[in-house]
Image 1 (spheres, rainbow, N blue to C red):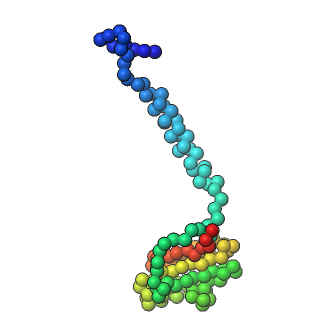
Image 2: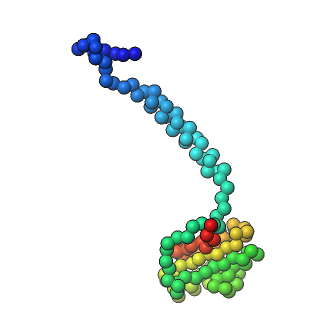
Image 3: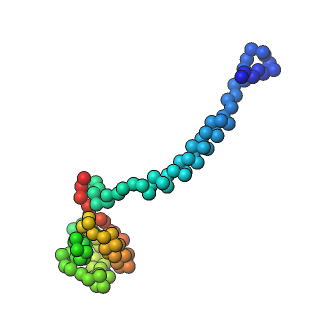
Amino acid sequence: MKRFTQRSAHTGMAELNITPLLDLAFVLLIIFIITTPLLENSIDVNLPIATPGKGSVEAQNLKTISINPKGQIYVEKEAVADSQLDRVLQNLKATHPDLTIAVRADRDIAYQRVIVVLDSLKRSQITKVGLVHNEP
């Protein structure tokens, strides 16, 4: 429907009614807010495969913690019990203040074993930690 101004009977108003557009935008926003959390929980994740990063670490400051398929923890090829892991990591941190740890875990082990290592690293105040993975 055309509206006319009082000046002339032949010119229309140059205003656009955006109320329906705003209603549509708000409805779409609400739909996206509701459906986004549902999408995040339905994704299957395969974490051990990732693309390589471009970071570089000095070899003398890099130490490796490995977890074999049986769940045994190794620090630099030396088997370590869970109870001794904190002490070993604190000694490493004392000798190498700029220590970087690479965690190599078998892809079929329980995730809890990796959490045990990460918790021990946190208690030892080692903040430079990387997870070793295979390239796709």
